[in-house]
Each structure stands twice: as C-alpha cells, then as structure tokens.
Amino acid sequence: MYKKTIKIASIIVASSLIYACSGEQTETAPEVVVVETEEVIVEDNTDQIDYVLPSPLQIAELFKRAGLTYIGDVTSSHKNVDNYNTKYDQKLNFGVYSADMAYCIMNNQTQESINYLTTLSKLSEKLWMTDIMGSMGLKNRLEENLGNEDSLTLIMADLQMQMDDYLDENGMGHTGSIIFAGAWIETMYLGTKVNEDERNEKLISRLSEQTMILQSLIASIKQNDTNNEYTDLVADLETLNKTFNSSGEDFTLNDEAVSALGEQIKTLRTKIVGA
Image 1 (cartoon, rainbow, N blue to C red):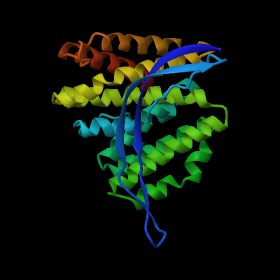
Image 2 (cartoon, rainbow, N blue to C red; image 1 turned 90 degrees about the vertical axis):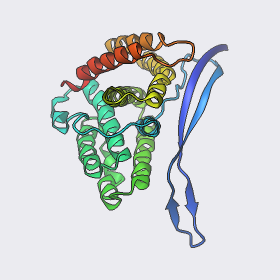
Image 3 (cartoon, rainbow, N blue to C red; image 1 turned 60 degrees about the vertical axis):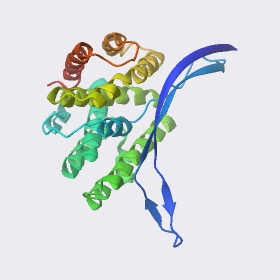
C-alpha cells in the first residue's frame, strides 16, 4: 500500500433533464460548473491513477463565456482528413476536429458543425470507432436542431460520453488522453488567436487556468505511454508548461507570456494538423 498525492482541476458540465407531467423529456441549457483545484490522496496497490480531463465542449464553453468569438477560416481544414494515415495522427486530429466542432456549435455555425461531424466520422472508421457515430444518428440530430444551440451542446456532450464509454469498454481508455491532447491544443490555439485579434482580460484568465489541466494531461500521457510513442508530444507539452510556470503569484499570464504561449501553441498545432 502506498500514498500518492496528485492535484486535479475538474471542470464539469451539468446537463439537467427535466421531466414534465406528461412524461416528456426536455433538454435544458448546460450549466458549466468549475470545481476548484483540490489535493487528492491516492491509496492503492498500483501505480495507475485516473486523471480527470474535461471534454473539448467544456473548455469551449468556458472560453466562450470569457469572450471567445467566432473567426472564420481559423479552424483546421476538413480537406486535411485524408492526410492522416497513422494512428498517432488520427488520434490527435480526431481531437482537433472535435474542438473545432465544439467551437462551431458554441457559435451557432451549424453547417460547419455538420461538416466537422462528417470529418470525424471518417476518422472514426480509421480508429475503429464507427459504432459510436452511426448508432447515435448524430447527423440527423444536428440537422433537426439547426439554430438551437442548447440542443446542439447536449448532442456534443452525449457524443463525448459515448466515446469515453466506448474507449473504456474496448480497452482503449489510454486513447482518450491523446484525443484530448489534440482537442486541448486546438482550443488553446483558438483562444490565443481570438485574444491576438482583440486583447481580452477574461479570456487571458481562462487561458492561464489551463495550467492545471495541462499538468494532468502530461501525467496521463506519460502513465500510459509504455512504448514511448508520445515522447515528442510530451516534450512539447512540457515546454508549454514552462511558459505557464512563468506566470506571477496571481497565476495570470502577462502579455509576454501570452505571446510566447501563442507562438508555441501555433508551432505545435502546425506539427499536428500539417498546415
């Protein structure tokens, strides 16, 4: 038996389901709840630790509330999907496209959301996750809820839960952290690009808070990377972490650090998407 202390930052989307007297189920707008960082003592006979990582939708929602506006043509091109032929590239770019889909949903870009869903379907076939996309009837659900941001948000949350369950049930849980890495990098890229276009103090604060999630992400990838497949990715993420560590006592990145972070994210994102 051993004790190991880790710190986790949990971000939760609480989607309420209200049942009317008629028995009909109504979807309500998701409520984002930020749980403060807490210290957890882990007692177990194994070195395995479950790191808490939020979904792309959760981060996109937090960023939107801080002023993440929509900029056309800043997301990753659908045309690149056929260029990803290795499982490494497919996992990371599945995450990138998931973040882009969340970004479009958050900004009522429904047709673009459907385009990204089609792109994700192509990648899911390569990653043996076809059952998820097909069984949920996502395309029809998106089309039926055109313009309804609340319903689209719940559809995206449903997709995330289904994917997490599928990965766990098929012994692919470790894939989730790599997919999330791609999604996190893309969301950070979108955040820094929007802030670059128009400086936003609230958005800078949300970007600064990502340090705890980044630390959990790095630890999760390291724990599962038994074949050293993601050594370069971890090194790049650790470089980003050093920039976060340069923030002051209030843990808010200064202008110089935000600029450096933006350049580092752009470089890493280019390595992943290829353009």
